[in-house]
Image 1 (cartoon, helix red, strand yellow):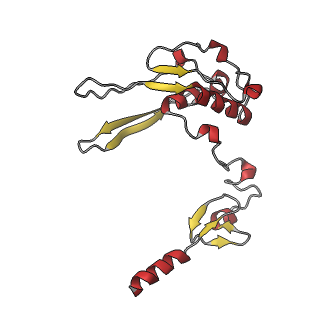
Image 2 (tube, rainbow, N blue to C red):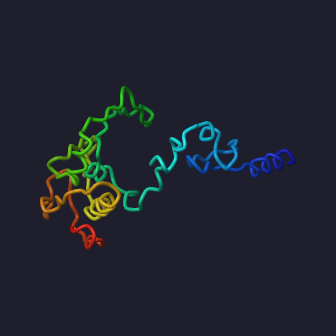
Image 3 (cartoon, rainbow, N blue to C red):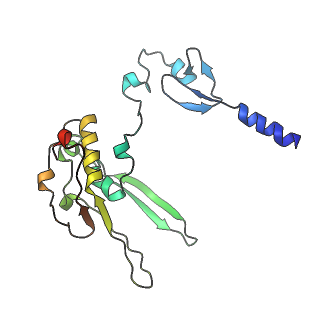
Length: 189
């Protein structure tokens, strides 16, 4: 029992150290003076590589961008990655080969948001069961609109393509659900 308790006390005594420059947090990280890690202390330049002065602090993710589905992410995505994924015999998932992101002009995605339903390339994977069951993807328009409102405030201005979005159900596999956007006065949807 004493060995167990001493182990618990050692574990409780550990603390996370946070670098004030690069915001890296590690267990028992050795710190240089002024609450910075040794990597930041070694840098001789006045603006450190991973500092907020160099726009390298990722900050927290806005709440509007935390819960989109895969299809909703594709609507507002600036890049399109492709990865080969395999289902293993025991039910696991594995990837093989290279991960490819399709090249896009840097200014083009920002001016093309939101993408129109006809412009979205969605790969639908069907797993055939006993009854030929399949899955349909649904897009919550409200979530996409809130995400676009947030992206408009964070990044360069995004032109309004909302007038081109149909108000009726979009053909399979994307279905829109009509909902009001609470930030109408900001994003003009």
